[in-house]
Image (tube, protein in one colour):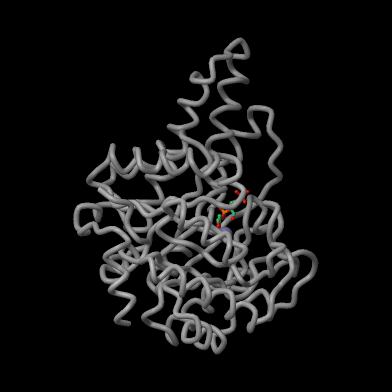
Amino acid sequence: MPLVPMRLLLDHAAEHDYGLAAFNVNNMEQIQAIMEAADETESPVIVQASRGAREYSQDNYLRHLMLAAAELYPRIPIAMHQDHGNSPETCKSAIENGFTSVMMDGSLLEDGKTPADFDYNVKVTRAVVETAHARGVTVEGELGCLGSLETGTGDKEDGHGAEGSLSRDQLLTDPDEAERFVQETGVDALAVAIGTSHGAYKFTRKPDGEVLAMDRIEEIHRRLPNCHLVMHGSSSVPQELQDIINAHGGQIRQTWGVPVEEIQRGIKSGVRKVNVDTDNRLAITGAIRKVLHEDPEKFDPRQYLKPARAAMKEVCIDRMKAFGQAGNAGKIKCVGTESFVSYYATV
Ligand code: G3H
Ligand code: 13P
Ligand code: ZN
């Protein structure tokens, strides 16, 4: 089974009204957790790697791990996606390394922290669309800067994201611009800014419409009913995962994420890809802390990596069921990127 273009999965999700979690990976155990969850729930999956993840794990290891996943789970359609590509060069190197989908995040300049203007964003995103579509590879763009509507600051918890203060206009995707952006770039999917941010510290209280602008998604979907929308920073930061970490020597300040029911509302309005990394990080860290805290004499990494992998698998299963991708793996006819070359040539 080849790795499939992400567009194949997004189109199926749109046709059948569900969303797909896109889980970030950095190592073998995370890939195993996702694949075990996908196998158990019969879910198609999007596995994504940030630039930092590619550097940490190295492209060769990552490529072979993904090919191993495809070989081990022939029933599961798997798309491999570059998360937050900062330049056309990053996206090109991802494609050369077997990624079947790339994100050109032109909402920021190449430094990954300075907000870019609309024209720059269109220029770099369109360039990536030309390169990627010629190879049947999917492209996600981003318009608007991720960041907090509560504090008016950009999102830099994970080392990338806008620095300093941002206006409400910069923190919310403009529906007029979204229409122009999709038209002028030809992207397959559009990531929107609605007040979510990466990492654990998204909201200081359970978010309402003031700080989590789901109505913006509804408006953009009304304007662009055929465009697949993407929610970044969409971990839910469950209380129980915070509690497990804190009960075993960790220090997570009280925080709130994006409630699953808000994501489900988004899925009703065109959200097809939902990015989740932090929840898995919390689950892994909580499980490892628990083992080492309760049994400080343990030192075989398998003794804490197994529970860590199991804890991440549980999060993945929960999201796969909640977003509706569960049960859909066998309904998708898998094809590789080459089948999409002619598709893009005709649209
Ligand atoms: O884009 C945010 C993801 O959580 C990846 O984070 O850049 O630390 O790998 P990272
Ligand atoms: P979280 O930090 O909310 O998991 O978001 C991940 C993400 O958007 C990756 O691009
Ligand atoms: Zn993101």
